Image 1 (cartoon, one colour):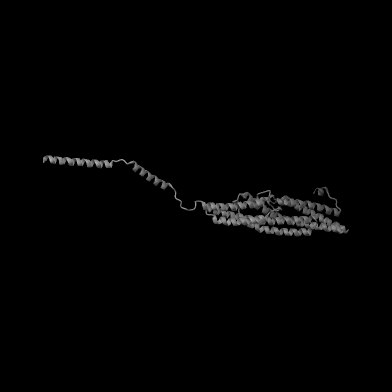
Image 2 (cartoon, helix red, strand yellow):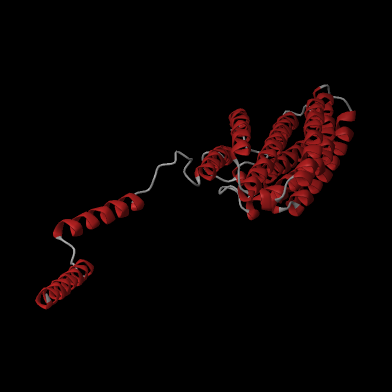
Length: 329
């Protein structure tokens, strides 16, 4: 009996040791190759899925700004083309045209400005940044400047054309026709004056220089040119009108001389004196003519030369001999 108890105790002890070893083995077991592969595959799949960007279908950032810039660029391109046309074949500057320009393409410029207006509305709708909006407003001022400049240039060109016709009338000793032309010249000048005042009031160099073909110097020089030509045409009118009356008197002296009238000599003497005064007045005008109005230089010189010839003709009718000084003139 005692022997059986000892065997029972030994059996229990062995069973207890076996259970403890099994628990220990379970806690310290190393991962199998299959377990490692599974964990790696899971992690790789997770990482790959996380790193791949997802398409959301929203607009690309910056697209509205680019659309605004493109619309603004179209307006600038058209306006730069306008300036190049304005200046003529030999210049891409506004200063390429002056009052004496005969091939000014006003119709083409007007059409391009209409196109620029349409483009500006598109640019205004697409401008999304403050900078773009400011640029659009500057372009609007530039279009206004060019519209007014076009009208002023046209009026001054028409005025100069009438001045040329007046010169021709004087050369042909048709003083009345010359005065009619001078009257039309003044009407055109009067049209230019309020337009010029609007240009100075509504535009400025800072705004207009937004396009590459106009800088601050160009703007200021064009303003000076308009101002000088408007003033010079006004100053020249009274002098040429005086000349036209002297020429009318010369024409009367010729008629009297052909009719052997005793009045011919006296009339011719008066005509010669008036022509001398007219020549002196024109010379003073030429000497004082400012550089921005040099478009009037050549025609003034022509008028002076015509006046000198007419004075010589008047003295011949009067029977006077020209002095060396008068011949030099």
